[in-house]
Image (cartoon, rainbow, N blue to C red):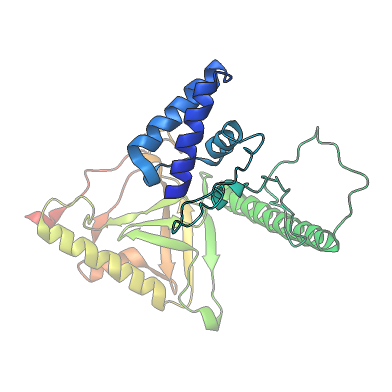
Amino acid sequence: MLSEQDVAYFRRRIGEVLQNGRATEWQRQFLGDMLQKLNRYGVRTKVSEKQFAILKRLTHEQSPSPQKKVVSPAGTPPQQPRQEPASLNYSPAPFVRTRRQRSPFRVRNPLRPRNPFRIRNPFRPRYPFRSVAGAGRSSLLIVIGCILFVGLIASFFRGEVGNIGSSSEPSSVTNVPSPTSKGRANFTITDGDTIRLNNGARVRLVGFNTPEKFEPMCSNEATLGNRASERLRELVGQAASTNVSLVACSCKPGTQGTKKCNYGRSCGKLEVDGRDVGQILISEGLAVPFVCGATGCPPTPRPWCG
């Protein structure tokens, strides 16, 4: 912002420069625009640092006018010599671009790829913290590699167990938990007559059929289906040992392991403490017998909706 003294000074000097006729065309244009701003806004005129510097340079008096001694009449104080405003001595500080200093504690992102075309400065000092960070990253990569290797070996052995279960001959997957892990099994329960092994294989338990809880035909079937599923989970949880025996499904020859055979599921029997879970659920009224032939099954019994 300009003071009243600055505005008066620039008005006078702009008028003098425009009258002497020595200004160029762009200087006259610039001074004319600035004079219009000063006349319109006065002390509220906004001038940038660059405009202020140009205005100061164009209106600067090259040589001070000679001082004349003025004899004032008696009783009139002598006129003081005119002084330029103090604001004209303003000179903005030069802008100096500085380079951002990098912190010696900065750790490089290990996921960021390195630029193969970047040339390293051989005279650049190395920070001791970076070597420590590099060693930490190397140790982390070694640990991750070991975890992946162990997971690969474990998945290989699980695949071997799955291959055994897909055979047409009966096979067995037995789990005898320790006293501290009693009731744990190597499968999860889907509903009252379907389980899923740890390798992802779905197994339909043969010899019985329980009510459907996912697509029931009536509310009574849905209630009994949930009770059968919870009862099977209770039998497995309370058992000291469980045994899953995979058997051949009753399907047409050549359809084993496809969607046309039991919807792509395997077939098997589940025993808890040596007892077949199907017989237990049938005796408790939560399942009905369902015996298939060599290459097919009769209609699925669903007597729960009347």
